[in-house]
Image 1 (spheres, one colour):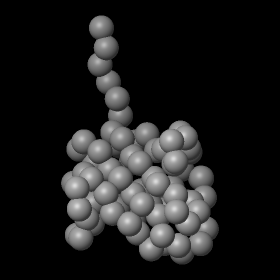
Image 2: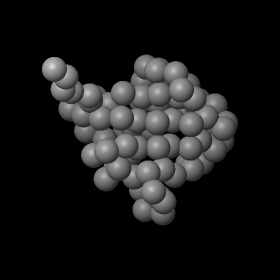
Image 3: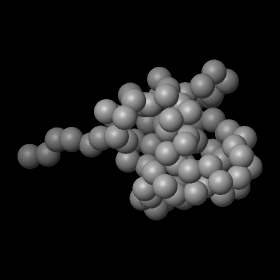
Length: 80
C-alpha cells in the first residue's frame, strides 16, 4: 500500500534517500502502524514526535491505510 509520509523541521533529516522536499511516498505492507514507520525511519524515541494522519492526531498503534498522509512534527515548545 502507498502512504505519503511528511516530516517537518528537524525531522526532515530522517527522510530516506529519494525524498523530495519534506516528504516521500512509501510502499508499505498492509497492517503497518504509525509506530512501525517511525521505527523504520530511525527517528529516535527521545524525539517523541506528534503524528497526524489525514489531519487527525493519532497514536503510534494507528494502522495506516492506502492513500493515507502521515505527517510528523517535532515536539512543540515555547509560548509566553
